[in-house]
Length: 189
Image (cartoon, rainbow, N blue to C red):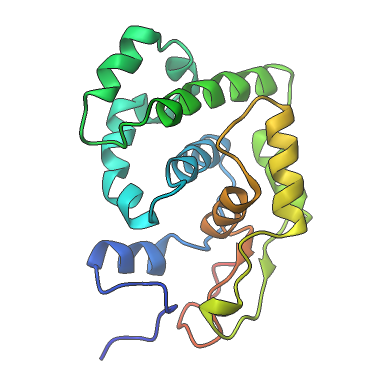
């Protein structure tokens, strides 16, 4: 018998694995946070499952999200990437990953810690919410609005408040597993 999951999870095994083993689990590694932020930006206007199924392609084409390599991508590289059906072939979104890599590097080269910077928006530890249904989940919060504003000031893009909230959920800054989900109250937070 299957365990009860959050209502947004389909019967797709990839989605179920993501929900059960990734979504809502705290991530502190700065480079992993950078990757997840970039991938959430790719989701804009699409369903997350679309990006999730292309994640390995993104990792391969964007040097495993190494910002030092991505920052060197030029117009010719962008044109090459736009020909690859393994990613979302949207010029603005492809360029956003490059722009975000440059913003990330500028931030850390000043001696800043990207993980500490992001986690400050939730006081450094996961916020555990107690929503009964997926319909109760907010699309954005005051914290995601503040994160979005701060990231934009640093030069990041595709980081609006809704994308930032989805990112916060994905990396466990907020635990939004609904109270009927078997992951609710799990020890991973």
